[in-house]
View 1 (cartoon, each protein chain N blue to C red):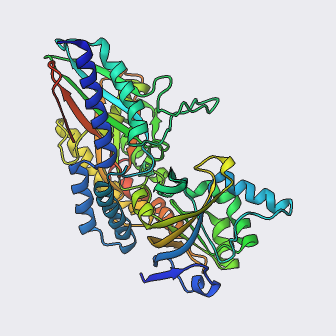
View 2: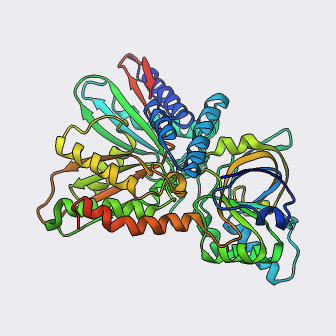
View 3: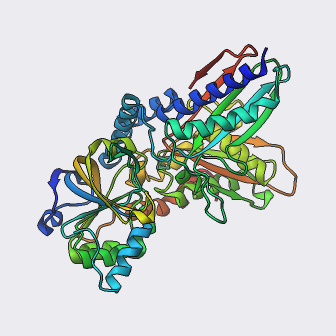
Length: 293
Length: 200
Ligand code: SF4
């Protein structure tokens, strides 16, 4: 297999994944939005969910980004130990980000945090963000998540005294949603990461919010139960779509955990707005690929 | 909830009869303005200099549009709202001095703006956050762009719209502020919810 051909295949797959992700809301999310539209009783909130659904339809029809904030690009990569070339992955993914910025187009969002300099192509130090894990086999799989600023703005880390245990987790989640109010464009998916360290808690919270499909059960039964409990509790706050009052403030709560140091209980909370952007590509060693949501 | 179809320029009587939770579909002229444009409007006001748009009976939209220039014409590709809270610093003065009747944005605004709405006869309406294509679809044409030196998202975009909406009224002229009421209510429910969760 010629590396050059494989490189081009990865770039094409990434470009297609970015394009799909910013135009089409994944089917699980669309379904959840339709469900709450039919179940919402507040007319104010319903007007907002209705507008969201019309917007999603228009974006599909006109092939335009569903939200003007096309975010910063995050890649979650899983690569097989036997995949022919690891070296070419990063370069191809970065190139795809540059090309996508021009062709779709994406809003050039990445800026230097201190000087404000904007390279104009959604790249920069650590950008696009590429997270790589190794897996068995010979395929390359990655999910691209263009993450908007509004929902990231209200994401938080709590470090309660560890003795407070699950009570602290529940309080942290309720307070984060309360404090976020209308800012993250509710209805949102609330990602919660428990344990690890400060960085690990936020990392797994973000993956839980942005990557996990709606409707998929949590493999840990006690966390599945906690997710359902929190889902009901958060929606009892009554904040509603866009904060105009209603039964649905969150679409789901997704929790993940890591083993922790006994002296700390980090709780990372990351919000994903209704405009969930994600698409996954699988690239075979021969350069054939498929993209799905 | 009543649905209104309004056309600019808006009269003070038009907006005084609107109430929280009413829905507007708006046709006519709207002007986008974000932080930098608001700041400059206030500076011009202080220095006694005119601004390049007539906002009397007018509409301000908190939005930094994504635009494209095709054959010498600007086209808005996407134009969802930005968070209005950042404009709280300026909006009351702008309502008072320029005769703005309708502010559109997302996330609602604070007590100072609500007070100015009541006093001078203006309202605030939410347009759905993230609904950039829906907004762009209601824009018939870009009439003009002013203050382009502020950068594309921060410039004043004067847009002709048709049936732009749904715009949900969340601040009316009676002093009601729906978003604040909703958040206040949520805060009041917090302890009871945490008790049910056995978290306090
Ligand atoms: S929070 Fe999400 S939906 Fe709202 S403007 Fe940002 S990216 Fe778009």
